Image 1 (cartoon, rainbow, N blue to C red):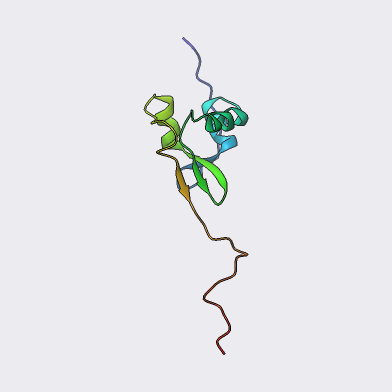
Image 2 (cartoon, helix red, strand yellow; image 1 turned 180 degrees about the vertical axis):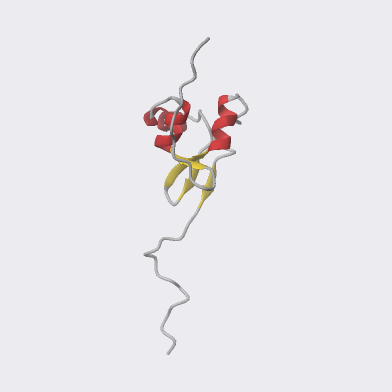
Length: 93
């Protein structure tokens, strides 16, 4: 019987992990997850503000073989940039 290794990862309050922590959780290197994403394999990522995250539930599903194919299930969340001009703040002359 194989021993189970305890791994410490940082999970955000909403259940997301960055690529480094997701890779550690899966026992892989971050580069492996990047290559899987490029090749349409692996767990479904979520893109938030230009950064890639993985939900713990998606990683658990991937481990158990329940993860759907990448592409159709990839979630992208757009967030406004803090340095972008606000169209509601104009000259009111």
